[in-house]
Length: 123
Image (cartoon, rainbow, N blue to C red; front, top):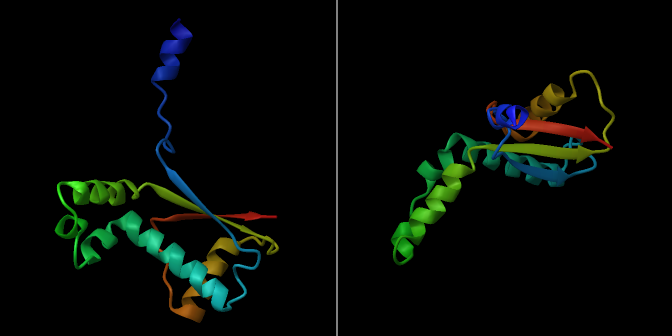
């Protein structure tokens, strides 16, 4: 019994995190498909920071009856606890993560939020 009570007090920092995964074999090659990938990841970073809520010109509340818009806003707010995984066949290097985000910034002008965790799984 004592053992079970101790487990109830453990806090999992990842509890409630939405993990969004992309399979993009050559995510660092710099082509048009990679631009789409990184714009998607940039938008997820904006969601995490709450910028998409502020950026919308017309809210769901304005277009939907009742309080349905409130539900959609609540979903967007809850999406601030997200993490991204990119599955790639690129060869892992010591500073792969930093190198990819710098290349994305230079090539496409896309900046990924530092608040968004982007993890790479090398297949």
